[in-house]
Amino acid sequence: MKQTVLALTLLATLGLAQADNGPPPGGGPGNNPALDAALKECAASSSKGSDGRPDFKAMDACMTAKGFEKPAKPPAGSPPPSSN
Image (tube, rainbow, N blue to C red; front, side):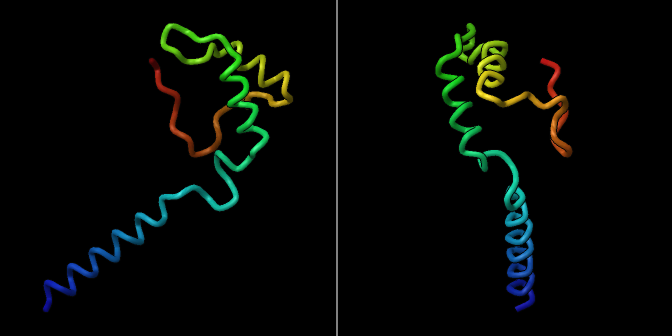
């Protein structure tokens, strides 16, 4: 009986911890359809590098032309940029 209670407690705790890992309500990426459409359009029209990804300068220019400015710094709470 004690093992069953312990197992249920652990499962409930893990379930609650997992439920809290989602994006904040009303925020986060994917909540701006105009931005999403511009990103897709610019990625499709920009030249690709040797790795198959869109050229960053071309993407920045395309997004600026569509009225979206690149943020000066990353959002609060985001991981630091990789040094690759």
